[in-house]
Length: 341
Image 1 (cartoon, rainbow, N blue to C red):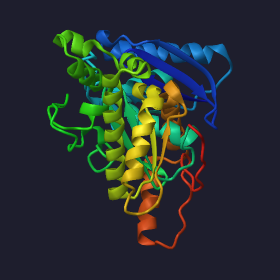
Image 2 (cartoon, rainbow, N blue to C red; image 1 turned 60 degrees about the vertical axis):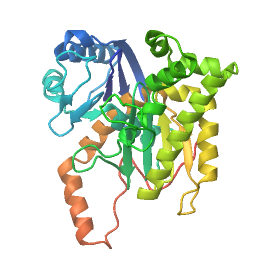
Image 3 (cartoon, one colour; image 1 turned 90 degrees about the vertical axis):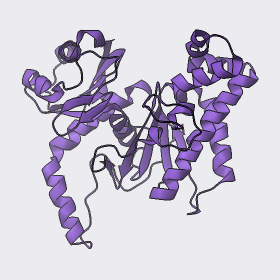
Image 4 (tube, rainbow, N blue to C red; image 1 turned 60 degrees about the horizontal axis):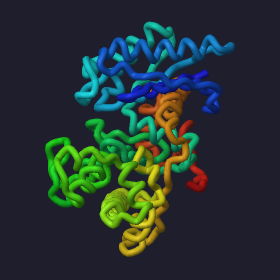
């Protein structure tokens, strides 16, 4: 079996997967975020040990998806939000590998989300995808030529902090980023701005509450979701123009209001089609809350089958000899599989 772990600010999800990434068992436990990194990893390990005790299974490797900026090669957290105590700098993979006795691999949670969706979700088998998560913030990840592309500095795909979406202040300190219009936090704040009231009242609305108001015909709520969808569509068009990517998968809590997001997304895409002329496909994530954990398991499977050094050597050989066919990536593939959202 391969284990996948999703360490979030509120809950930690652990799954056991077959080598084909079929989930055979799973468990969700509270994340002791205020108790520090050691307690958070201990909670994940305890959940995994319970799953392993439920039935006969030989653990081959484990993958972890965690919020924040991570060093995937060193296996540690670089930067974490103030929701976590003693998480930045924590050695995740070394700690877990020492306990489990098998290799452990760390990913940013959005990267793991995209790995899961490409492996078993709404964009299974697609060779080129931008994944976007609309949650408390807006995250992004790139899948290029059948593999995750994290860029020379590990920040490729961070579409949530691309400017050009107005002049509102962003949580990162910048202004006019996509996150200021399309995140769950910003949807609540934008609705509050339109309807007035105290600062507390303006920021207390959740994206879910605004969605419920929109479905009841509230014009301010409808306008906020229309602006969020239009902003997402503009980000999609920028990506399509720069990278010639035409497949996009959107997840996160805000995507639960897909009935409100999809119409403005499709309207903007229809009005401003990409210059390539190729149609853009946008789908809602298919794995729901399990995408990060399954994607983490997928990373572990990939690394065990084809370690990073082997892949780097193969890619170098491909660069020298463009006529040598590339082997399909274990988590990618060359045949697009269309699935409904």
